[in-house]
Length: 341
Ligand code: TRP
Image (tube, rainbow, N blue to C red; front, side, top):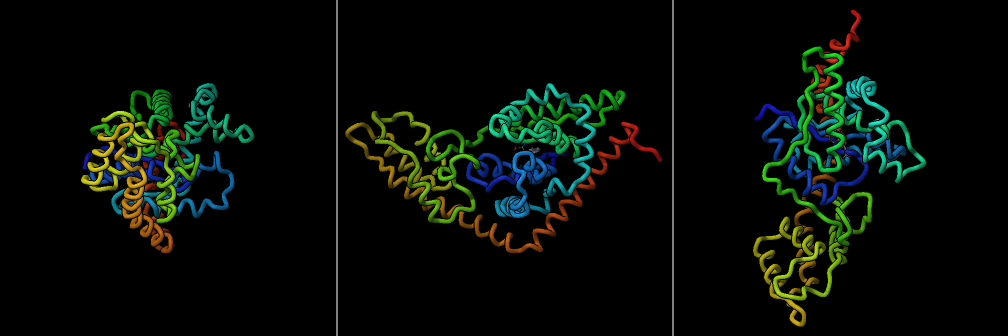
């Protein structure tokens, strides 16, 4: 076990989909065997964009259940819910005094959300990166596996930690600066939306996104209507990205023989002699995808039906997380002089 702490947060704002699974979840599953890992449900963060809390409880439990069903071991990692750890809110408050209005307003994700929701530009949205910094810094020395869209938040977290140390630490590093964790090899899989328009995403075009919760017939329906074309014009052509995407998915869930067979068909096809049949490819992909997703879906449903077990897992995570967070808050208060007896 390497002596580094890895942390990641998941907002409970939608169901887990193939893009999340192959782009993030699956990689994290490897890390749990090598590092001390923290995984939490970022329910406070979701309030900045999803003020309706009527489904929050279900969504939080689903995130916990889906991650365990995918293979996250709650005995091994610290799996908890953000709002179960009030120490994070306290650190957020302190860090807010070290974050400047100007830099928060300039944050890319903030500007995007302002554009998307001009009717709800709340202060929580503005200070979203500060809360994220608190999430990370609360466990100290965290490395964070993040995508490109989160790198700016991580840079801000480093700045806040640095400012804290400068102002309250004297010559000491009270709060270590967090860094992005890069997976070895760097062969991160990117799954596109089935219509070929951008990344597979939970909020946009649901019919082009395969969720881990989708039942067999829905999986099949979505794959069968994925975008294709009339076939390659010349032999050995470069694949358009929507075709490449189907092959990417196939490589993830089908046997090597199957993939090789369709690759050959593709490479041997040209205008007037198209031997690849996208209908057959999609049928095969559907069958293999269904076989792959079925056990995860069933395990998720089993966990969701066992409320007692889920509660026990969340309580255990809460205790572990609060113990680590409490140590940091003690150091922070001491450094700041917020300690009177
Ligand atoms: N902002 C992250 C996202 O949108 C979620 C998140 C919240 C997070 N706190 C975090 C991720 C801390 C990593 C570390 O996906």
